[in-house]
Length: 259
Image 1: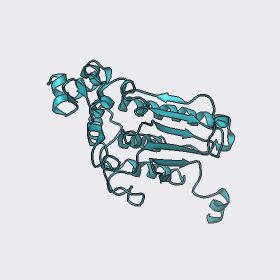
Image 2: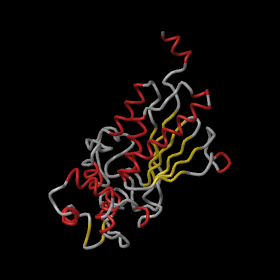
Image 3: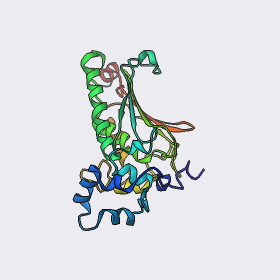
Image 4: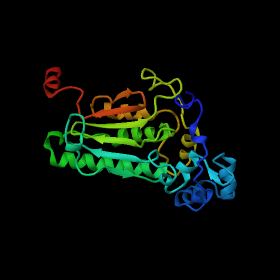
């Protein structure tokens, strides 16, 4: 129950198959090390930040500072992107091609996923004139994917899923809302299920998060500025789903009548 609500940070769990050398020799840690912590030995810094025990990394250390976390955290550390050619619930029959798997460190997969989702959406607009005048704010996609990666429940053996439909994008993050966060206060309250990941990824050059609890607010604001309907947040028994719709705040007829 404590893990489910994020009271006990599962990011502190040691990963038995991990090796601290996976971080010390990684490209992502090398970039971070030279940009942020040049005056301390690599192993010492990981130890002082409580990212390892002896030669094993914990989940936070694996996700932040190894190039392929998926090797030791399979099915719970990647992002799956699905493109469904339908406005209804997706199925094998409406799946366009094979699902795309985005792997790598938390930092790398956030940026790679945002760019891949953006390119798929742009291809929909190019070939389907129904949506040619509607665009998703990249800020909204970025903030919601970032939020999913940083606040997902890493104890659940399921990857984050991004489902792209003809009329919406759904981002499903494993785990229920953490701590005291509810559907009613999610835009006003703050709680980090994975505080180490949230704090340290903010120290990267060009960090994906601002670490001030404004991510979802920024996503909602960007939609409003384009006069698109606000994202919808749904909580299930095992996940949180954010739905971003291809819908204007008002129809052309309503806009004319209001004018």
